Image (cartoon, rainbow, N blue to C red):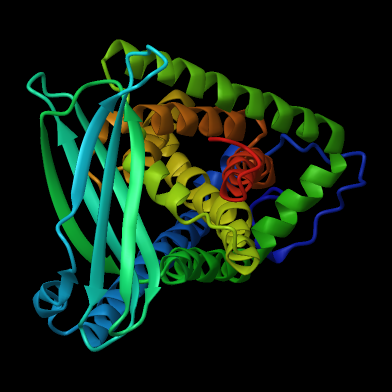
Length: 362
């Protein structure tokens, strides 16, 4: 028996001259008890996602039992106005305008009413303009209008009118499952977290350096991914990124919730699942390279699978591989990859938050 055989039942003297932070790491992650614990962590994550998805759908079905009737009673007071104009500055951009006056005759207040206008031309170029209005009272007449600069002359347009729940609702639906998962992970696996925290503290400067290297690696991966997507002719932003961006409004409380979601609980939950659980599973079946590639691929696909734009998985896959490599180089210290993930998400959060207040143009 060595000092790692009963790691979670024995206190280790980290100040001992015999202590080696590298010793027993591989043995630790082959331990059958740890594999069982990782299985529990994975089940917590999956069940949390399923539960809150189910509850959100039940809530919407109860609140809006007849969605077709609601849509039929969002009426147009006047015919919508469309127009496409050449820009006067001589650029190749065209300005598209849409204006419509509508009325809520549904009998209930609607959190959001939106119009999606799909613009296309004969060369299969496309652009979607989305306009929305929040908190529409029953009987209220309201205006929807906007303009967009596009790089082709649209010859066809398709208008889709809809309604939706508030941004608060979707922020909470995103926050609750990862928050519950992260807290549950800390409770179930607290001794492993404590172990990694002690290792992080003991080798603090090196771990901080690894976090900085990891952050540079992530952004390098994103630059490479952008070139790959450009080479493949992909210019659109991923649906996942667009959904996240749409949640940012100049609302302080909502931004606090988004910070909690994106910068605190998501890095904890995703790093535990994709690195501690999935990476170690694949590494045990192959090697560390297999763990990096396969866990990174799962990480990438999970960010786009709900939307079906699988080509957009490329940046997430490369990012996931960087996380996996940093996890390996940090001797599987989960706090290192959580740190890299936090910095990456925080910069995105800051950019979108400044954009919501009109301080920075995204």
